[in-house]
Image 1 (cartoon, helix red, strand yellow):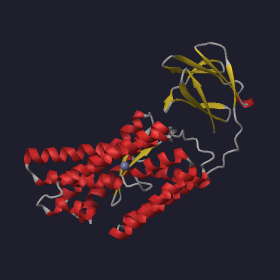
Image 2: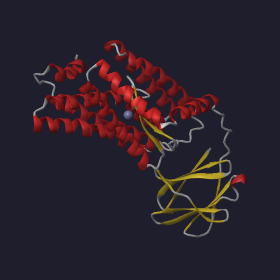
Image 3: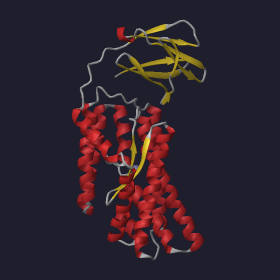
Image 4: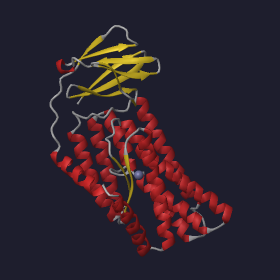
Length: 337
Ligand SMILES: [Zn+2]
């Protein structure tokens, strides 16, 4: 995969070329649809008109570009080292595909999740927890749909949580940030809704929903891979320099180890193992990464969005921090101890 960047009409474009074929066109961070214009020429609509690409010379490492049918300009493609085949990941992905193929599995997992949580806690708690998880995962699914990434829907995994599964691979770090953040952002709806319903009905269970949702989403926002917060952190830091990304993500692992040791969170240890593998893959693929990095503006904007979502959930928790009910104020006491 080769990426070529160029500027036309004061806008930054980039195209992805693979096996002498034009795979994708980006304007700033957004992927543009590609259509066939004529033999050997493809086009993409941009705000100021039409961008055309002559792809007949791609095998000779030449790409022709023209705006609105004006004179062709030819770009020389950089020669890249051939991509190493990721056999292990490919095999794992295939196995995963087989497992997730049936809808029956989806329903069975959801049922097992509810039963599992009910066995651990109570039926009310189980339903609340699953509702919070589903809203959170739905946020991820909506974000994937926004980027026209095919989704396989939501999977609930007993005792672990939820998972929004996609078919296509993401192509930009910006997509990773938005998809990761939309889960906790949708979760904010559950949190705030719980607060509103609590004041409307004075039923304590809605306050519990708000606190549970805030806690669940804040856990997902921890800056640790493979959690949502870790993905935001990875996208921002690997967009700067790959060694910055490596250091920041390793710091996340360190933070996670401290957290699991201090609070005795065994589940987090499992996540840390998966997260370390993800950091390793990211680092190994740093020279051949086809992910369009965030520019400086995108990095700052992503960080601000992350902080806002975190602040929203913390605000909901703080709201119940000095409530007389022990269950409601517990999370806040745990965080502040
Ligand atoms: Zn999530």
